[in-house]
Structures are given as structure tokens and as C-alpha cells.
Image (cartoon, rainbow, N blue to C red; front, side, top):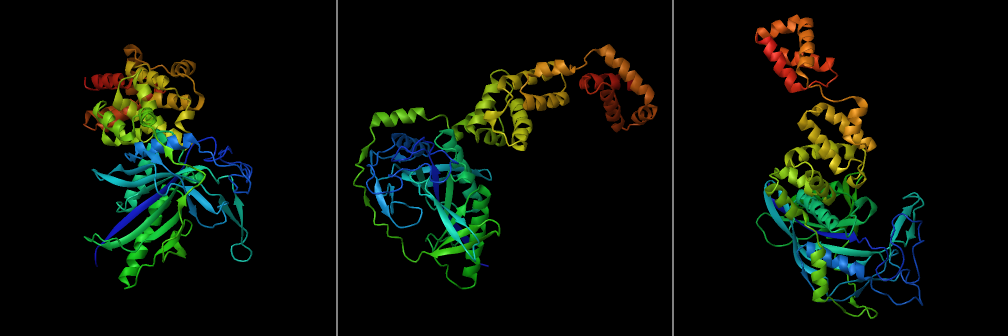
Length: 481
């Protein structure tokens, strides 16, 4: 069977976190009733006022392009991309066709122990379209309604080079991209709400070939899982077509999440002619060097740099560093805990095993977590001091998560202080040994599992509050006499 290579390029649309739309003062808040955040300008009605560029949207676009290692333009322009569709009220979309904000960048991903740079062809700013809501029975009485609240919302489009070679690389790229954009706080990147959307251009070619072959465009992928599955299916579909001796038809295809298949939407036998020309109402916009430098200085430490620092300065394993730095908020929380308890690996273990587990199970964001970083640090100090055992600490941690109480208050209220008095524990050990002669005899015959059973009995008698190291020490001393 011939070997094929997959060639994938992504077009990612990301809505920006501005309070108002790109060219008017309408709100961009998500979830409002349909067609309540509109005006004559974003509805394309005649007699409306002239567009006024949202400078914050330009700033966010520049910040994104810088964070993606792009070359920034000295001057940007806006152009009219002409086409008709029901959710495009003006009959054209204002975009950056001729002079985008950023070009020639890259995002670095890590897969199977190796790094790879995915090229960014360009980053440009444009206005979003409205949203079609398909209603009714799809066969007997289909109809659609249009919500124009989204029309005019500032949107950046990030276009990659055709450097992606697998569904997994595509998924990793999108995850890294989302992480970077969230770090610089220009978008919430919620795919389920449509603030981050992805289209994929997919083709296959004989292994070793450098020629780009016929591609299909895949739409309607609103999760990382959908991107992976959609690309995976489309690659296999194209392989089957070629193996049957047929030609791949250039199409726009729709990913059907429920059925797990792609469906043809429309052919793409010729390139769309958008008849782009400069928007006459929006003059060229200069990007002063001083402003660009100011924006560059506002960019925080990004995931790659933080990853390197966490592995180098804190000595964390690559896996820990990757998990902790994927989210700026988690990374900030981790370093805040370290200011009061400087044991990097121990803190990492607790955040990854306990905190993230509870956050995920309760669908809680780290910003809404009731456990303050300094209180987690105090809890870990108490374990080190022997005030409580590690096992009891996990129960205390769960109550801290649920109530926001301080660890010392929970321990005091519930009487959870660890028993570390040797005489007290010795008496309980003697009682357990006397009550379990069979296990004592098993231990003396070399059955080491008996020791674990006896330790468990002592911990049971003390309701888990006995110092486990001291219990082990006293039991072995008495058993070995």
C-alpha cells in the first residue's frame, strides 16, 4: 500500500475581548437576546454614520501578532471583501486583505519528545459576521433565523502555513495557540461559545513529494476533540478516494459531530472572487514605533519561556511544567504557593493531583477557587511539621476547597492534630499486638504483609491521627524483640 503524507493548514478565527464592536459602539457581551446589540452601522442600513476604528482591537491584534513571533507592519489598511450571505448585513466584510497586521510568525509545539515550529502566514483583523440559527424540521419545513449581535465584533484571523502533518499536531497547535492568547488576555477562546473557531484545509500527497495537492476545507469544528476527529476522518476519506483511483474533489465540507463523518457542503472548483478593494471610509492606519514598543513591553512571560524557567529554576519534570504553564492562572497560582512554601515538586504534586482534580470535577475555574495560595502553603507546612498526616491533609484540603476555610481552623474544629507522643502511641501498639496474635506470628515467620496490617490497625484505632512513621518504628521495635 503506498505511503501518503498529510498536509494541513489551519484558519483560526478568534473574537477579541473588547467591550464594543470594531467600527461602532454596540456591546460585544455574549448571551444577549437576538438582535438587541445592533445599530444602523453594524446592520449596514443606509444613512448610518461612518465607521470609527476601535483602537483597542488594533492593540490586541498587534499583541497577538507579537506573541506569535510575527513581523509587524508599519502601516495597516482595511479592505472590503465583497460577497453575499444572509448573515453578512452590508454585503461585504471589512478585513485586512492587502496589508495585514502581522506576517511570518510561528508557534512551537512539542510531540513525542521533539519540538516543531508551525509557521504563521499572517494575522489580520476583521469584523465578524452575524449568526444563522437553523430551525424547524430539516426535511419537511426547514427555515433559518439571523442574529446580528455578533456582526461587527472584532475578530482576528490566524492563518498557518501548510506545516501540520497530523490530527494530533493540529490539536496541539490549537491548544498552544489558545494558551498564548489567554496569557496575553485578548480573548477567552471559548470554542463552545464561538469565540474561537477553526477551519482546516486538508490534502494528502505521496510520501516524499513536495507538491501541494487538491485540498478540502473542513468547517464546523467547535472543540479540540472535533478538530482531531474531523481531520482524522477526512484524511482517511481522501486516502480511500485515491486508492480507488479517483480524484479528490475540491470542496468545503461540514464535520457532523454526531455521526462522526464529514459531509460535502459546496464545491470549490474556482477560487472565490471577493473583489477586494480598500475601504474608502477607513484611511491607512500608521503604527508608531513607540506604541509598538509599549505594546511589546506589556506582553507577559509566555508559556514557552515559563516552561523553560519551571524546568530550569524549579527543576520540575517536563510533564509537570507543561501542565502548570498551559494556563497563566494556574502558573501564577503555583508560583504564589511557592512564595510561602518553597518546595517546587511537592507543590506541583498537590496542584496536579488534588487541586486540578477538584477543579475539573466541579467545573470550577482557578480564579473561583476558594483555597488561597498561602493557605495551601500552610497546609503543606503542617504536613512537614507532623501536625497532620498526609492522608488527613487530603481531607482537610477538600474541606478548604468546599468552604474556603483556613487549614488551621479546620484542624482545630475537627480535632485532627496528629498524635506524635511516643508513649501514647506505644500503648495503642501494645493493645493492637495483643489483639492480633496471628498477625504477630505471621510477621515472625517472614510474612512482611502482616506489618502493613498491624500499621493499619493502629491507624484505625487512632482514626488516622497517629504519626505513621512513629507507628512503623514502634511496631518494628516491638515485633523484632
